[in-house]
Amino acid sequence: MLPDALKRLVHELKKLPGVGPRGAERIALWLITDGVGVSSALSDALSAAVEEVGFCPVCGTLTRKGEQCPMYTDPSRDKTRICVVEGPLDAVAIERSGVFDGTYHVLGGVLSPLEGVTPDDIRIPDLIKRVKDDSVVEVIIATNPSAEGDVTANYIADELRSYGIGVTRLARGLPTGGLIDYADSDTIEKALENRIKL
Amino acid sequence: MRHPNRQLRCSACYHGSVLIERVHIRDYRNIEREEIEPPPGINLIFGANAQGKTNFLDAIHVAAYLKSARATREREIVRGGAQRARVEVSLAREDGLKNQLSVTVAGGKKFVKLDGNSITRFEDAIGVLSAHFFFPGDLSLIKGDPSLRRETLDYEVVKAVPSAVRPYADYKRALMQRNAILKRKDDAGINGSEMNAWSDRLVAAGVEIIRMRTNLLKRISPRFIEHYRRISENPGKTEIGYVSSVAGKVSGKSREALRGSFSKELARAMEKEAELGYTTVGPHRDELLFTIGGESLRRFGSQGQQRCAVLAFRIALCDVAREIGGEEPVLCLDDALSELDDVRKTHLLKSLEGRKQVFITLASKKELKLVSSCAAKIWEMKAGKLSPISRA
Image 1 (tube, each protein chain N blue to C red):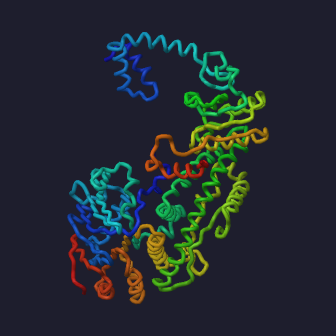
Image 2 (cartoon, rainbow over the protein chains, first blue to last red):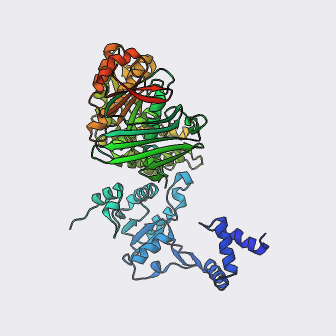
Image 3 (cartoon, rainbow over the protein chains, first blue to last red):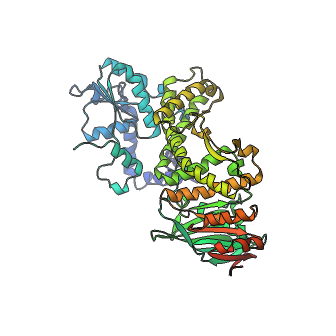
């Protein structure tokens, strides 16, 4: 039914996360009709992104291909503090808050034997190397508060024990602007556990 | 997200007892259309065989657990020739709260409504009507797989302490992940520290589970023994023991001690587990052991003893629910009297007096005569119709 070129476009769009067959058809049609102006910009942006964006060889954060990330090369940032995160977007979220002036280390996943993810798959050896090379004093583990995130945090803490550095984990509790009566009991339990003195 | 431990989820965190004020049944097995308002106290349902007494209790079971205690397939509960079966209950709680719960089965599918709203997550509706059942044919609590006993106990644990879903979910996840490591067959072998990270998580959650189970059991046990003694013809010394695969005798051990011995057992089992590819010790392998005179009731008990034990256990669970300030469940006993001699029949009925609401079915006129003085109301079931009758 569809012209071949359009069919190919739909076929590729369907592979995008969160896009189903119907959605793919609608997007494809929009791109070649109403959104035709967007299309060429989009295709330029896409090839530029693929061409130019890469991962920092040290931190694993998003940066220009073949370069170390600005967070690592910036001399004013504290290289002796590393914040360990699961994915590159987690680093972006923390960076957006503007309160952390150390460097990042992206694991690229968490330990999950069920999905075949082992310690060797998630850049833990690289982290240990950095701890030695940059005489790190503190590793802040910011993996997600899930079973896998917790276990990964504990595993890393164990691996780093012999280096005699500080290993910390992000606090858990109530979100800012959240309502206590909407919080689940587990969150409240954690918030009580991690309460702070005023 | 689907709850990782579905059968353990219960939204019900109500307090005070629950009362069924009204039951409305449509096309449920042989019951075409019935609507009754049972009073608090003991409701006796008398009738000859195959008139629908058990079906009536089973309909209440559907309202409580959203499934029949007997049919394995949903469509089996729809009356022959009808399109859909429907059970609706109006519930009143001690604190004045009311709930209206309906379960409709049509075309092999279930539709649940709570106070007019459709419920899509069934676990939110399970336990809104909290009830315990005894069906004489079902001795699986004693004779069945150990997992059945664990599940029964765990369900009560979560009802008593809703936050307990957490360690259960945690344990299940850690167990799956740990087993995945054990199943991993590669040359590198098992990474010790990776294994330890998951084992620690397993131990932490597992110890909480063991403690919650044994704490609850400590309350259930004396009640069970008392009820068993009263209703059993042949009362040897009965006990319910918790047989832990990791800690030997659990009672009196601190959290730390339990963690220590769980970890030690895991380490000891390591080699075997690596070969088998799964975790062989932990609360998921623990057993609830019913004994009589020191012997396993499952292996050496007579049918009669086993039946009494199931009955005593169900009544004990209701006692404990009330005791710990939770909800006193409705108790439904199908043909529980026929196996007991006259003295014990009256004992059983006496021990049920003062309970919020009980339904008991019985088939013999003689039985009815004997126990009718305890009843708040007596119903007769005839060809799927219930009608109140006066004291015999």
